[in-house]
Length: 107
Image (cartoon, rainbow, N blue to C red; front, side, top):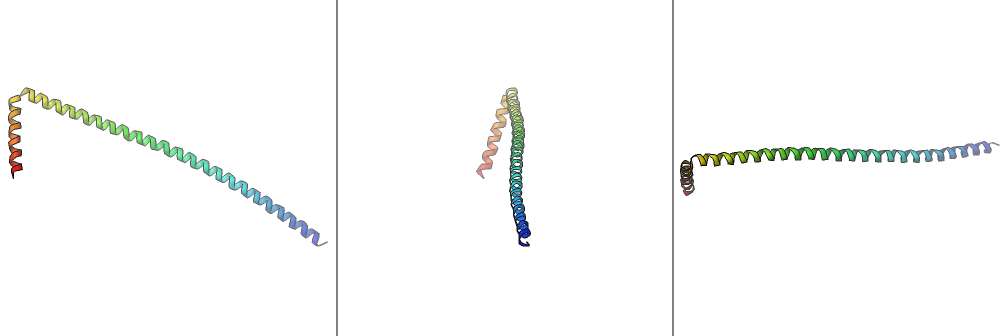
């Protein structure tokens, strides 16, 4: 009689272990799917933030380029205006500057 209860207990332990394996497999699958979902959402968030940062940098670069272009256009306009006001003086200054550069390059 002693063998019968032991065999029943052994079968019960065996069934419990099988159920435990199945539960562990289900838990592993659930955790894996959850982590995949988290990774996917993190990747999407990183992409979104990267695009936003790139757009901000591009916008700031365009603004700086436009300001530099406007400043250059204004400087050219100012120089043209000064030359129109005093053409003889402008030619004289350019002539003297040419002589000065020539002397410096001769050395």
